[in-house]
Image (cartoon, rainbow, N blue to C red; front, side, top):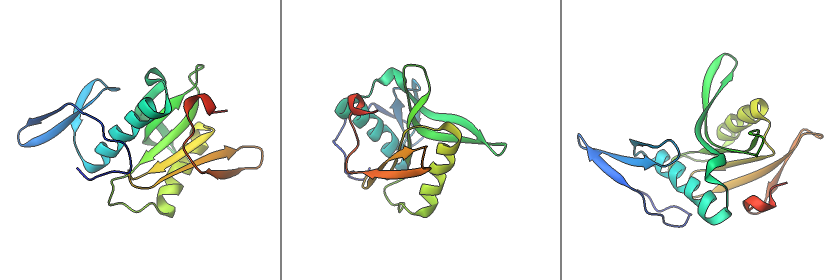
Length: 150
């Protein structure tokens, strides 16, 4: 897989029928290893191991409904009341983070109303804090540690 702008992590993988699978520790199953999945797994480990996000409050491919269409948020961090606190949209490293990607996470934000939004392709990471009162977003210089989330 591509080198990411993230720490390196060890992953459990297996090969079946000439396809590589990676263990998703959150869904407790092996999933097909694609470039986007590698970013999702790496970024999730980064949040847990480097930013102290509690693994038991994270959901992978969290299903929501938007305009009668089923969509899946790549990563959702919940607070202790199980309300979404942060959502992450992951893309493969070769996918440019553009307006379309931001529109996708804004759709998820509209539905889930988390305070924080992150878009990443494993190379570039953009973290935003939403201000519901002013219906605006502020870009943050860094991804906050769990204990610093307000």
